[in-house]
Image (cartoon, rainbow, N blue to C red; front, top):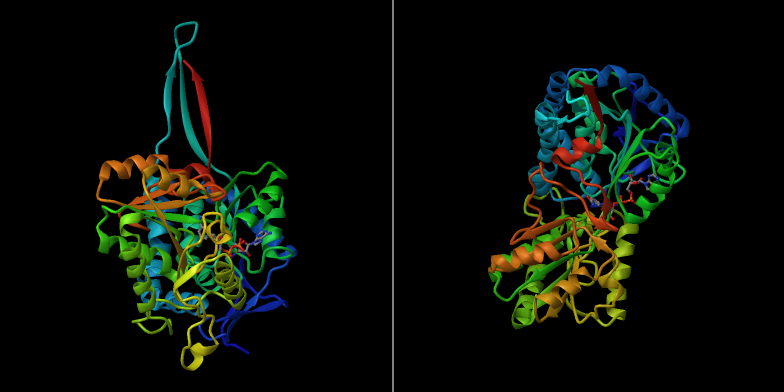
Length: 485
Ligand code: NAD
């Protein structure tokens, strides 16, 4: 039996269950932990604890809540090595990536929202009245109540804390479920919350799957007042139907099929570097990753050759090796899915410039869920591989002639999360940025984030915005008070 066991955290206590499932290390295919699955009854206990704790936490002074968030951030920093081990073990992502991105961002999410909540202001309007004396309107924030948080496996701690931190900052209590694939860092976070002295019931953690398990039970619970979800667009649609019961607010960060637009006047090396990073980071398992690359015709062949070269040069293998650039995919099922797109691309007429299969790796890695970084050309714009989210380290290159055509191709998608534009013509960059149907545009960069800025997607890629005051707006009930003078 594996030594590591991940338990639920309910009303300030770690809770075991008789139903357990295995947490698999994707780098080796071995069982790394057992996870105690919460059923609907246990989820209801968590919701009851969160409901009970609502009033106390909601009425806690903002400065005290912010101080608590600061202690939680410090707790993550203090136990950074434990978080690193759990995150790399669960995801197989390179240790250098988890150390520089996932774990520090987990702590940063608490610090950012601690700062924002202490400086958040409301609106004030002096209004005329018929008697000439006027009225004063002002707005105040109040917590929503119990918030259900459901998150995915690709950036486990980063995305989980991105929702938990602002929800706590705004005075809500929480019932949260991490992905069944990555229960580790969320469980460590519960330990950090306990060590920081967060009152019992304010943060509750349940483990399990979606349908017929803890995820569905959170969404179905009448005691959950709002739902914040990151995951696939199809899952979002499902949750939205359930959230309609009780007309509950939702915030959705969903899938993407993101384009990069590479103009002939770009800084060539910087664009190759940027597009390679945006395709292969985290083995292509970031919602913001690029899967469609539109390249202006004069540089198309040179760019395709350079990107294929980058793909072939990627260091794939053991995530614990500091030199590794690309780890495995998250699971056998997910690799089967991505491989099915590798086959589909060929069936749809793609020329495979790099990759296309499973790499041959030594030792334990031979039984991990590794896959080759892959570059295609020649796919017609109608190909399914250009419209469906693959969520792996692969992209298709398509030529274009001018701005209008680039815009039309980029916007030819039912998703609308992100786009990166590579050009030295800044006026063109701004012009394109305004016309592309997405929530996030990067000009000559990718994945550069200021956590105060709005984050979210258009079309199938989401509903609402989080980040900065947008998070505070979602996680608060804004109330107007009108005073007759
Ligand atoms: P998923 O939708 O399969 O699962 C996400 C979470 O929802 C998991 O915790 C899962 O257990 C739970 N879940 C599944 N079905 C449910 C149901 N019926 N009711 C309640 N909960 C349910 O997504 P995934 O495979 O874990 O993550 C990958 C997806 O997430 C990709 O589509 C990716 O683009 C998207 N994503 C989006 C963003 C963003 O910010 N827009 C960020 C990261 C990932």
